[in-house]
Image (cartoon, rainbow, N blue to C red; front, side):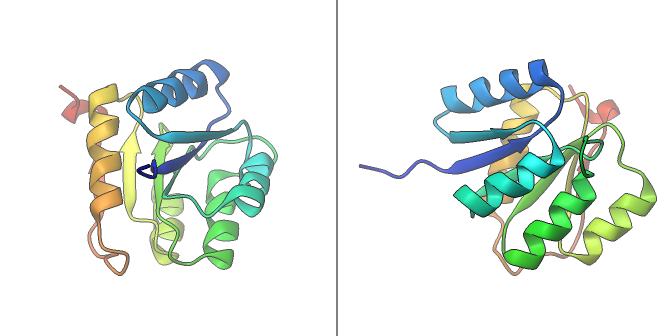
Length: 140
C-alpha cells in the first residue's frame, strides 16, 4: 500500500480549516488539523513530523511564527508553508531566518494551494534559498 503524504493544517478559522482539510483529503493527503497555535505545536509533538505543515500566522494561543519556531527547533528539516493574509515583513524575516521560505497569501484558489503544496513537497530538504510567494493579484 502506498503511503499518503501527511499535512498538518494549523488554521483558526473553522470553516476554512474544514474546507482545506476536506479538499486535501479528496486529493489523497492524510490531513491532521489544529485550531490554534498551541494545538498545532501539540499535534506536531504527538503526531509529527509531517510531510508538510500549512500554518496561518494570526492564531490564538500562540502565533504562527511561534509555531514555526517550536517546530523548527524540534525538527529543523520539517517543511512548512505559510498560508496567511497577514504576511508582514517582520514575520517574513523571522520565518526566513529559521528556514521557512514558502508563503501563500490568502485568499487563494484551491488549485493554487495544491500547486504550492506540490512545489514545497518536491523541494529538496536543503533548499531554503529564494522565497516562493503568491499574492492575491497573482491568483487566476
